[in-house]
Image (cartoon, rainbow, N blue to C red; front, side, top):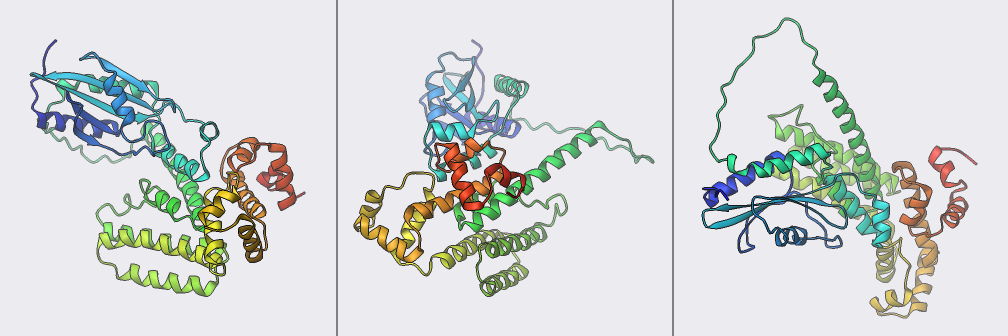
Length: 407
């Protein structure tokens, strides 16, 4: 087999080019199973198969032939490509992925693996970040790996040709395609905005931060101010402050409290003169508004009841085990139930049901899921029972609520 005459630095340089071309996680291992280079854009959470680098190492261990392209698919349908080659007396392996060949069924995965509500939300956020490749795209990326030898580190400087100005604009087919892409981007931004506001209204700072930081899809002014990052980030922060203020009001936080925090951040945004300060300000705003929502609703409760509420917020789609929960709080189950009802005027079960119905209302309006899927997602195995509970709580069936009908 022909050997490649590549130095390690050249291998890394070529791997970086492949990462830029594919926009996928890229790993290069030497013959001792040690990482020479890696660039991760997607991090697989611990509850998923192949988390960390287990998928990548599993593919590496099963690649027996050099000069052969390998494809690896894990049990959650995450795809990877791998290619091994020789460099003088050494061997190297490059692996790219993960990607999907089709969008996974999040409902089926959550149900099969019994994910908690928090894990289901994390999975949804992750899936939104992972590329979905057509067969032709995947095949092209595989071909790119096989051309590793020809992708040397020499910089190719093109001859630049600048066309003369035309008196009439020429319509291009690409213009229509760009409009379609822009329309899809607008739809994605509105959906992200809705999910973001729902997270803030729930006091879920983790999800809110993830949505803002996922490729900054919610706000993008780079096309308007490509060379003015400070101005762009100020605009982002102003809009973010407005959304946070609205979300807090939707959560029935007193207007005077919202006014104080909103004015404080409006002043900080105006006086910020560094890009890094504005980046930090975004996260601080989200955390403080979420804390405001949480503290406003929990401040009147004892520490024990606050911890119980926080637990139910995280696991509202799971069965509450009072004995285990009481043990974690160093109290008796009957005392826990009694104190919780005294303070909230609701039983543990009723409080959990309230959270489930609120989440169902959000999903019915924002997701294209069946009634059965929504029922299971929020913790009901019987869709008919869920429909009865939903109607009792809201006065409408799930279908009527989704369609905006009155009874």
